[in-house]
Amino acid sequence: MIIGGITFLVALGSSFIRPRDVFWGMRLDRPRWLFFEPAIPLIWTVVFACGAFSACLVWQDDPGSSKTWLLMGFYLLVEVITVAYIPATLWFRSLKVGTVLGGLGVVLGVLLMLRVFPISELAALLLLPYVLWSPVGTYTTGQMIDLNPSAG
Image (cartoon, one colour):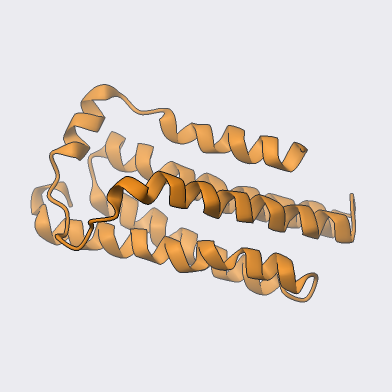
């Protein structure tokens, strides 16, 4: 319950955006192949739920140990970086900021998955949606830089 609650609270951080920033973001050109954009909030909800369940499995393996607490911090870091993507991109009006955060999230997500694998193969498998989906967002943001050079 606690892991799920923290995941939910951190995810709410993406709502710290100003209306004028949303207007800027909505005006950006997007790749033509981005037909699934309306499904992105649902996709991220599933990704975060899988991550929270993964963290629960890791916690249950060795609850309260310093190693487990460090891994919980790693999970939190990955989520915070991921959630920071939208507000930071909009606040700075820079798709490069989003691309950097997205790329950092990809690298950290892969490292977390590799670190978790020896503890629980299922926990690592539950991180696979993040490891597969986050590069899509990073790549899309990179493509948007090409379409919106002034927003780079």
